[in-house]
Amino acid sequence: HVIFPMPEKTTRSIWASAKHVLEYAALRTLAQLLRMMGIDTASGLMGWIWQKIGPRTARQQRVTGNLRLAFPEMRDEELAEIARLQWNNLGRTFAESFMIDRFIDEPGRMEFNHDDMAERIAKSGKGFVLVSLHTANWEVICIPVAERLEITGLYQKLSNARADRYVREMREMVYRGGLLPKSVSTPRTVMKTVRAGNGVAMLADQREKKGVEVKFFGQTTRANPFPAMIARRLDVPLIAGRTIRLSGARFRVEAQELPVPRTDDMNADIQAAAEAIQNRFEAWIREYPGQWMWVHDRWRPGRPRRQRSIQALDKSNPNAN
Image 1 (cartoon, helix red, strand yellow):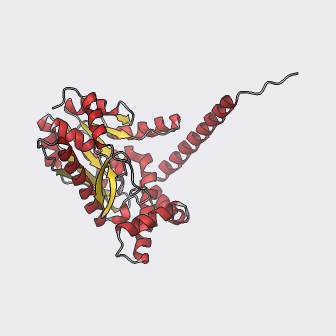
Image 2 (cartoon, rainbow, N blue to C red; image 1 turned 90 degrees about the horizontal axis):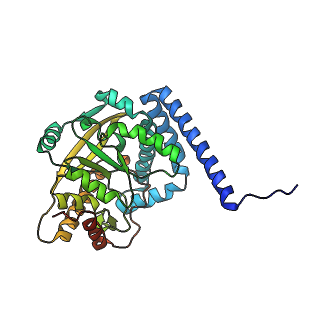
Image 3 (cartoon, one colour; image 1 turned 30 degrees about the vertical axis):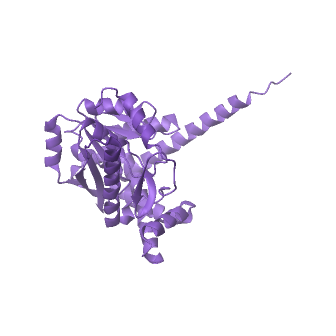
């Protein structure tokens, strides 16, 4: 008998598919175990595990390097404590992300003192842009206003389609407008959503290699100008929001409207609004440095692409003023 070997691409595809199935099975199993424990136990356990394991991983070097850039005046012991708190928070957030439905059912876990802002936005009939950062548990930030405001969330799609669908279904409980994966068509969809009077929410604290140049903790880096572009183009509020971990799995959600200049120089207006976002984030991080995700490659330089980004936005919105 002659045995014909399968093409190399087919073999790789089979192995990749099998790997995805195993990853998905492991994810569902872990999620079920954590849900059986309940929010507080699962959050505390994963926080403890991550703070023990995290400092022993390769990512700890980046964490330490970022902390030294941001806080050159601090002693090594202080930086180590911030890193420990960060790992603990990441572990807690990981566990809590599988129980978003329970946070919705237990509103007492969330403090929110900005009902007046939410009501004002809802009554205005205008859309809005909400930017947040990877601090405390960023997954629950929209829960306090989910019933009053229709918000579409932007997210990074997972390569594992099964895992992506499972995680997206959990997170969509908070977003009545659904979750929108980042793609080349995202700008057009986002602008259409905001123009229709709804909100969009996105994380904006990561380095954007094709973004605008800003200062962050005194260091030059690049930031995503897209939230500022939307607010400037459509004349809608630009809201910065954060969660603060109070104790265990209890949080306070805070929000602040940021200034968006509207002069004859659109590029300068977008630049100023993008800087305002990063300045607000930096101030918040300095308040609770142990709750921010320091594992980001935040300060590596990138290539400027501001003008091309604006032109791309224009093409997706030929009627924008």
